[in-house]
Amino acid sequence: MKSIAILGERLSGLSTAFYLKNKTKNFNLTIFDKSPKIQEGRQIVFHPQNKNQENHKLYFDQGTNFILLDLLNNPKDKEIYNQIFEKNEIFSKNLSKINKPVYFLDNNNQIIKNSLQGTQMTYKNGLTEISEKIAKTLENEIKFNTKINTILKPKDSNKWEITYQDIKKNQKFTQNFDLVLVGLEPLTLLKILKNNQKQIEKDNKKYYNNNQNNNQDFKQALNSLQNLEHKQNINISLNFQIPKALIGKENINTDFSEFFALMKEEENNDIDFIVVENDKPGHIPDLRGDDKFDFIYLGLNIQMSNEWTEQNINKEDELIIIYVLEKISKIITNDKNKSFFNPKIIQYTDKIFKINQYLKYKEVTKWSYSMHYQLNDLNQYIKNQDKKGIYFCYDILNPQPNIINQITKGIKMGKVINQTI
Image 1 (cartoon, rainbow, N blue to C red):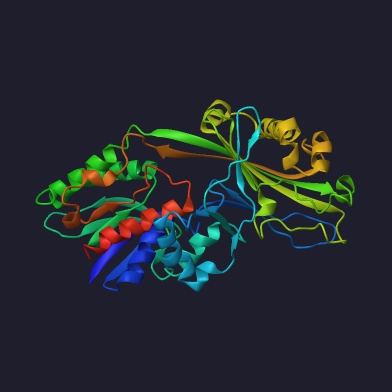
Image 2: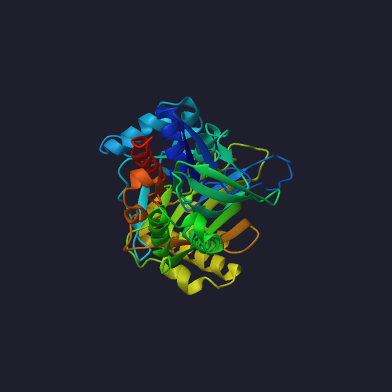
């Protein structure tokens, strides 16, 4: 029975493991991840304080904001839906359709009424739920709190030797595998490259002989990561508590907007997207009909463009939020956009969208990721890959913004590996 290691707990790697486990039992699987628990996606859960002591939870999905499935026109989407979401009951629980469209925003702050093709969906407790659900089926195979140190193939061996550290216990271990799927971040892989070289210099005889080509191919693949371009993102999560008296009885049941998300239409827009979390089932409590509260929540999630981020990454959070609020105000008060918003929101834009008493929660998150535009697949460096048994997740260098794309990439890799088991 072959042993397989999956390094990193990205959604694509989890999807590969899920596919393999459901296709064949003819292997032993181990998934390594440095996190103490399932952590896929960037989610904020806010617990607002209120005088009624209600235990409200507000969910903000950062980065990837919804699941897009085009079941009528895209056979791959239909395959994923059948294999993951529909077939297994645990994936359909809490999965809800978003009943509003995604519109586009041009550089003049005008909303363009063109919606995306397909069905937008979300999980009521945030999109991290899809990773948690997949991982739940694999919980016996996951080693949490583990940091990979080296990945090498000793001479005259058919197995890959992985040394790793238990972060909690501060202990080092060595384990051998027939096949390794690497799904770690590029910067982590560059650290492993250095560790590999140190280990080879320390014990040259162990790693250089018949398997020199195996280690050299792997080294060449990791070396290609040296000149990566690192992109950065800024994401802003905002929660407003707007007095019901401000909205008025005649407009209290009118939604904030006709759409649930705006996406940039042109590349040089400062904003990538704006998402109204209220319109994603389960994310923001709807207090409009609850007489115990004299306010309503409005949850917005905004991601800035790469270009704007690069120019403003060192700007203070408060200044970033002020800029975003001004941008939102310009969109709402644009004469050509008035039909898209609650009229009272338009009327009191200047009062609501300021850093004042109505803005009860604000969070600026900054992160970076690696992007390589010339190289799409590290697997091309590994000659006779099926015999050498080392694979790279397809999305290491091209992070997939769409959850379905991540799962699709994972299943594609699962099919490749399944042929070699």
